[in-house]
Length: 107
Image (cartoon, rainbow, N blue to C red):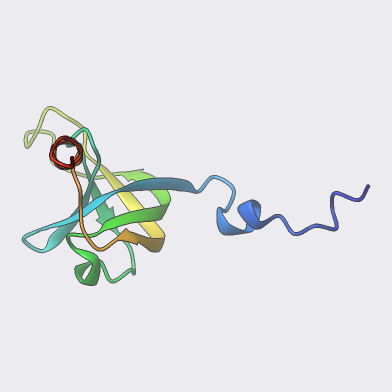
């Protein structure tokens, strides 16, 4: 059994230390954020073309980095996600509420 001879597709698609997050890509003024099911926003940065995927459900790969927001602007620390790669999951963003509504109204 030679386990090394098989390509590690997962290892090659996600670099060591790279994170994977999914959610709805939203645009606010000139910034982009990923909103997850708990309505938490993660601000995005990187070379990807976020504008073409605004309003889509996406999976992003990259790493978190703390932002340098002024301390008096907010009591919560803000985090940016440095995107290295993006995959579109769906051309729409579906919230949990809309999923429940659809399932209740399909008879």
